[in-house]
Image 1 (cartoon, rainbow, N blue to C red):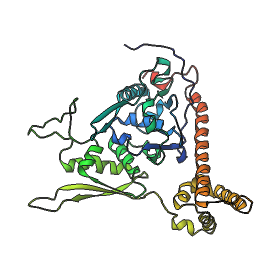
Image 2: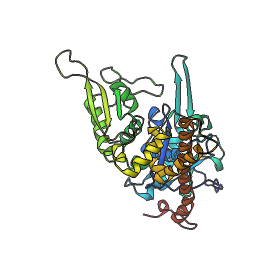
Image 3: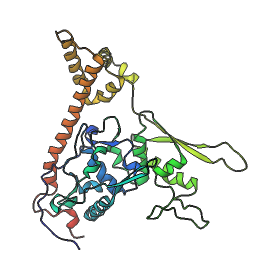
Image 4: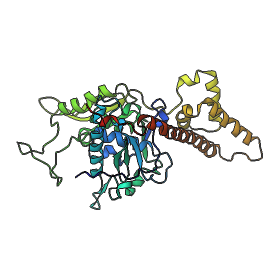
Length: 383
């Protein structure tokens, strides 16, 4: 039975997402305990959680009481009818309420399931769909996997990700994001099946189902079908994103008649993430002088390329002048490596957090423009 109620909405910020500003759409996930390592959830639920993770800033030490996502974000660029978005939102929140993250230590024989959402709250504080917004309350027991991640996280930008229409493309996007520093992901076919949720089909007790021949039932048991559905088709979707890729099917040594068995897949990003200053930056005289100055103050190549666009040349030049003034004063820098890199990263994070706050504040106006008091949302309109 559905109960109607008029619980007062939580006084939480409404979020406007600036697609043109990549830094305002960054998703940070734990490197090992992510959605790419847990059971499959639908495309719509993945979109919700990407928007939730976007709202958790770098350096956060605790979860917010709740996170809010606009219902129209679910169907943007999908071609789905906005008049049905309320139905889609309900189904996605239902699914997320049932999602469990499973933690297991096989050596110690310890298995711990954790619900993704906090489902034990009173109505006014619970996850729900209301007033054009989806409210998500994460389980505080999972906080260590969302905040204060230090070096154990991977990041990717939402532009591109939210334009994907298939689950397999979204899963590959997430996995390739974990390898964008090297640009190469080499994975056994067995592990790839597990990651892409194409391993053995199991029942509710996690027992493998059998096919007609008595063998473990598999999704896409033929390797050629597996590759067609989970690699070739997503490859076309990812072609316009930062994780466009090529791949090679690696085969075992031939032992008899017939084709060689595919044992591994090797994915190569067409544009790996920069880890060093590109030659074209050094070709510009102004950029070259700035880079040489940063190197004199022991700024790492990684930090230069990471914060080059975030701080811009004026911001980096300002830091250089401050460091030079400090060097000429009575308070010289003891360790350029530690002091200057920390100062640059701190300045970069402040810029990113400022942009995120600007987006949060701007959305209050945007959301009220979309659904001002007295206006009927599109999903409640007659057909």
